[in-house]
Image (cartoon, rainbow, N blue to C red; front, side, top):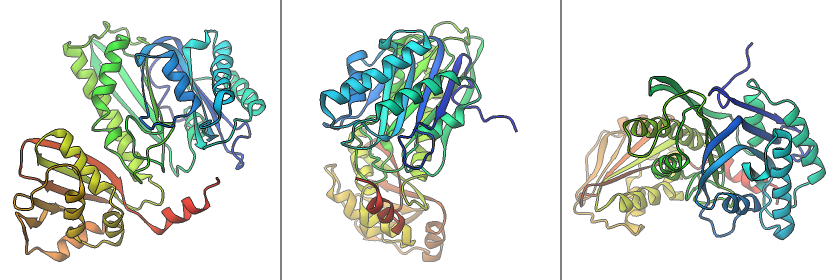
Length: 401
């Protein structure tokens, strides 16, 4: 059986993942994803005020959020957060050692870490892991690399799309890890995007910032924003298209391509939320602004009462109305309407008579749709979440601290 390729499907990218002993399970825990040549790069990082040493390093190397990189080295199991100056040195060591093995400078390799907070990285193991991963880099080790990024994830999450840009076939791929501590204020845990499109670094950053709000930032599993959220995009130009600049027709096409990949990854994150059995899409329209719509949608998506009702298949629309009302968005019950699975359950201050069996049947499925019309303007936004199950409690009660 041929190896599964996704992150190295764009021309000129290699990857590998190995087990070096950071995880007690013995599973893969260190990954390298790299371009064989220098690549335009863009990055977004967490807005949590407590951030990991790798995030601090990223911000130091790419203060504007874009530049030129060769690749990313990532470990799972230990997040290198709240480890002081020693942790910063460890992050630098990861990036610099990987860079030497890739034949480039330390400033062109980012480091990313995810896992338990407050522990130092076992650097002897990390060094051995980097050497082993670099020695086995290639276009067929994608699954190994992705598994090495995962912590409580139960499945591999990746997406690939292709299109024609500038008369050339362009490929864009992405991988992401994340299952818990998911409520991004930028991105979502650790994500890497690769493309063989030629695009200016500043344009790549603009595109990434443009798609983040209604893809990665639209996801919440448990309302907890990680200290390590990082998404890196690399574009090496191997497709041979004319370099894309912001504002061009090809830029608009590239943004659409990027949005498609990021939304698919975001949906996969919600589907793989810790203990999740259902994915829930909360679409809010009729807000005074898009920003208020996003606040309202996230308020419902983060409501434990709502998420428990979804798990139990209970059409308790009162929890939706209450969650909307507690948000900072303007909500007037006299103009508000709520739908579950397309069925109106509340309209303009009054409960609706509805087909209970039809709504319960919808809630018994795996993909749940909730629609809320605030009736106050043209603002709209959509949030993605999952249900809360007993398994969520089990996973987080047993998670090592």
